[in-house]
Length: 313
Image (cartoon, rainbow, N blue to C red; front, side, top):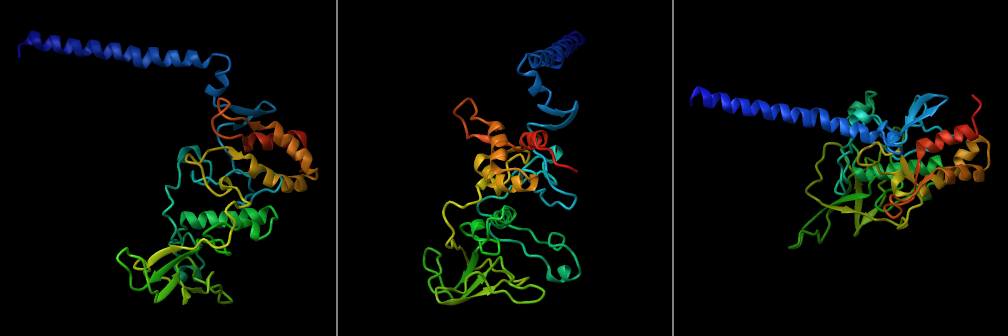
């Protein structure tokens, strides 16, 4: 390669670098900034910030936890959907649990570590997606004063875990157990500090159901989810028991908001109809008029309640 050829190649590369720097590093960002100043778009470009008395307190795009210092839901506020983003609605940890429909078997906690005073999570307990849904549904029913039956869901035990059996025995050509010899409720240890608790179902095809024991491997059995007698349309809506993909979604369904109205009214000392009036004023319609469903921004709704019916602190 001659020196003149070398210079031409690098001069062309330098010119391309300069042009691309101007276009992508200056012109394009400036264009986007100018578009963001257009009326109607500026607020969204600034993060859809909500201010109270001139102080930024929230964003319409990101949910918040309405809990006390111990993590318990505050009864005077509407609660959002669960969040898998960090400790809840953490923009720096946005994401989902990555658990799917096949996540139905829990990882049990080590009883020795529990006896030593560790929390279930520190002792190795990892709930499946099914158990998370079951336990959340039961918790919402208790919180809203609906009774135990209202929190029931298909494939959930009365105790709020996944109703899943491991069935052992000879199998047919399709891999299905034809004559069960042993049946284990894989998500139930069935023990508490003071008494023994039986499994959610006593017998399966004539075989007595056992409780799971820590350290035993039940993967050789056929995994059988048991639907149970729960209604196909549970009283607790799906968005109350499942997290969004981002973990930041501030919206809930109208059905979940209606479920909470009576509890919020009692906590604030006002009528349920007064709460529902604020709820109706803070509903977001379908995107473009036809996409999705009508929904409620929990952050905006709670701020509107505080403005209309402030709580004496």
